[in-house]
Length: 221
Image (cartoon, rainbow, N blue to C red; front, top):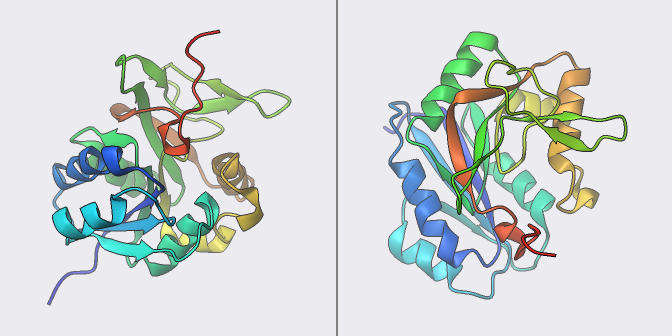
């Protein structure tokens, strides 16, 4: 009889065929002993994402949506299907470092129920983007790059670890949010409820920033 997973990795995918394989391989290569389940919600992709998942990653639980429902609905569906004690919301264009799951799990065991994240690196340049973010008076994210300052205001939803019970207590993402500021909402709710929001510098993930949405990172002009 299979063991109940400790973590459910939830990947919202839309036309991410060229990113899915390195993302999923980085999960399968984790230095982490407890059982992990991987769930992918495909948001009616028009590329070959679904066939790639079925052909190369039969161990992945695929939720293939009949219509395009958006990021928040997709994550809520995966969380509802998840059986792990913890959820890791992971973008399809993110690649985990090998000790990522262990680092997150160790922190959750040490500090208790809360929201946790990792150092985010630019997948193209290797540059550190942030170790979580603070918020200014207008709730604009301010990147934290101090490894000795783990207490932050928010964790980016590209790689966000949360206790499943806390997710259920918050009620997941408001589905009308679309795909902007849903991570900020989740972290603010958790902090208002008295739970920590913590960014860990001991590990990280590489992120093709904006690629989940077909771009979004200004490079020139």
